[in-house]
Structures are given as structure tokens and as C-alpha cells.
Image (cartoon, rainbow over all chains, first blue to last red):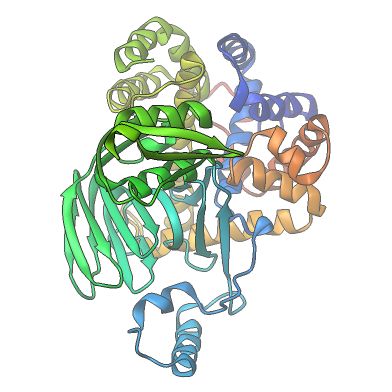
Length: 315
Length: 184
């Protein structure tokens, strides 16, 4: 029964490949195909099991090798004041003791341009969705770790108490305690928001536990942590963004990350706090006008750019 | 589509979803179980437009069915591997699970390593990075039908090599024909 025969196997593979874009009609046809012969169901089952194995493979074929060859977790464990050479040698020691199999350097980075999101399966039912304009580093030897260099990502992490999932954010670490959470890292500011389960922020220092619904913002240089309520965590995937007291400049940047639209906020407005929901369409003109309406600003087009500035009445 | 829209659609599609899950899992008990699970999940689906809500439900159902099949085959593998060493112990340490996972990863990486570069990249872009075939075609500089051919050949090789190596795990247990299979 395992050896379904090449024709049935080919059909099963064809169904599997078509699946991401199948309409309702095709799904009904697929159900009929599955029911028609137990050999069909068996062949399809074999395809899904092979597919699940494939899903565990890190996206190494497409990687950009990191210029910084240090293993990513070493960055977060060393205090900043350790000199470069010493840090590098400590990192090398660390690499030898933690990477027992495989070549010494297995880190790779994944970068998304603004407007392009990408989901990376991390095995064991975990996945990371990178927003546009995001750069992350992963370690092939340790699928339970990731590093966010810049941008935004939503983590949906299968919890394993013996091997918690860790995200390195420069000097800080976030450790999952069973979890869906979102992290933004941009211009020296970090935001962590939790929608399911909980995470531990900075286990080596602040040691803050964030529960579902909690959020924090961290000024990376000033070391100031502000607690907040988590809004629509990961809503950016559907174009829904919720802001609470966010600087308008950050709002424009969040829209840019997600859609690639170049919306700039004039210096006069960029620090104005904004609270509210923004529904993004991906159409730069509409999104810029919508945002301008929400904040009562003027909008004008400058080539590919949309510039928001205070209305003349307000000036 | 709102949440209530999705759950309403779930109710109308339920009979076909049940057929899909029954065919996948070889029994109605597991299928009903998954439908229950789907119902709870649908209440937590983030609101927002879903392009083809019915297709969304079918994808969700097949994914859950596959998850269930995976946990069954993993358990069977562990049972087979450790039956003699640890008789009667149902809970295996995480390190053993990790060994099996590492073994599975090495196996699939070995198969990928033997593939032509383009086929390997197409498979990884399709499955690991979940890119649409159009994007894969642009990335590799080939046509969409070329991508489809690469994926078909690649998956065929994966299935042959992987289910060949763990043949006893690749057959779903079918309650209704247990004992009557021609190979038993």
C-alpha cells in the first residue's frame, strides 16, 4: 500500500503543490479524489509526511552570509564593554562548546525589502513572520534561537521548557514561556508585545515577565523601559495596525515596512503622538490620505513620496 | 470576512470538511475531533479580509490533519525505537525526541543535497519560505510552469526517498479496513 504506483504518487504531488491557490471547487474535487481509492489517500499521506520533513529545513539555500561571523547568541550574552578581540575569542570558545555538530559557523541572515513579508518555519510548529524592511539572523545549529537586527517580526513559538525559544536583540534577550509575540526594533527602540502565553524580557537584567496583553517599549541607549498594553499583536499581517501614543514618524515607518509606500512626516509633526487604528490597503495614495485625515494633516505628493505636513490652518 | 461569517461558513462546509478529514485520517473519531478543534480556533482567528474563506477552511483542516498524522508517526517511531530499551515507558525524554528530529533533518538534507541546485532552491522557496510559484519563478528566472515541473520532480524524489526509508510509518491506520489489507 505504501508503494502507491507512480501515477497515483504524481497525482498526490500535483494536488499538494496546487493547494496554496486552490479554490473551493478544487477542494471539493480533491475530497472526491481522496475518497475514490484508499491508495489515493495513502499516497497523499506519504506526500504530506515528506513535506513535513522538508518544512524543517532552514532556508539556507537562499541566505546571505552574515558579515559579522560571530554566532548570534554570543552577541547577547556579552556585556557591551568587552573589547572586540576579547569578545571574538569568547565567542569562538562559545561556538565550540555549543555547536557540537556541523561546521563552526551556521548562522545566516534573512532580509525582507519594505512591502514584502516572509514566514519562516522553525520546526516543531514554530514560525517567525518577518514584516517588510526587516533583517533577522538565524542559526542552523540552533533552531530555537533568532536575532532581530532591524524591523519587525511576529513569533509563534512552540514552547519547550527544556529549550526555550530565544530572540537576541542587541544586548537584550527575550525568552519565550509559551507564546505568540511581536517585536519591533527600529532606530534604537524596541517594542515587545505578547498576544498568547508569556515571555521573559531581558532575563539577565530587568527580568520582566510579560503576559498576554502586555507590551513594553525600550529605549536601547537610555535603558528606559515603558510598560504598555498590547494592541492588535501581529495585526500588521492583515494590514491592521494599532498605535498607542506612537510618534507619527514611527507610524509612517510602520506603514512603509508593511507596504513599501514612502510616506514621510514633516519634522514639525514627526514627534506628535498618535493613538488609533490604521487599516492599510497597500495603495500608497489611499494610505497616505487616510493617515492625513486621521491626524488632520495636509498631504502632497513628491514623486514616489507622500509628505504629510501640518495643515495651513494649524500653522 | 468577519468572525461570525467564518464560523457560519464553517457550518455549511462542515459535511465536506468531515469527508476530507475522514479520508485523510481513516476514521471519523479523529475527524470529529479536529472539527471541534477548528471551531475553537476559528473563534480566535484575527479579523481581517480572507481572500477565499472556504479555501482557508480547507487548508486549515488539511494542516490539522497532517499535524495529527505527524504526531502519530513520531510516536510510533519512538515506540519502535525504544520498545526494547525502555519497555512500558510512554514518556520519552526530550533528548530522544531531539535525536529523532535531528536524524529526520539530516535525512531530508541528504536528499536535498543530491538534487540539482535549482530544484533544491525551488523546494525551499515553496515550502520553507512559503513563496507563491510566481515569486519562485521570478527568483529563479524561469517560467511558472517550469517551477511547477521542478516542484513535481522534487517532491517525487523526496517522497520516494523519505517514505522508502520509513515505509511502515507512511500508511495511515484505517479503522475500517484494518485486518483486511492485502498486505497484512
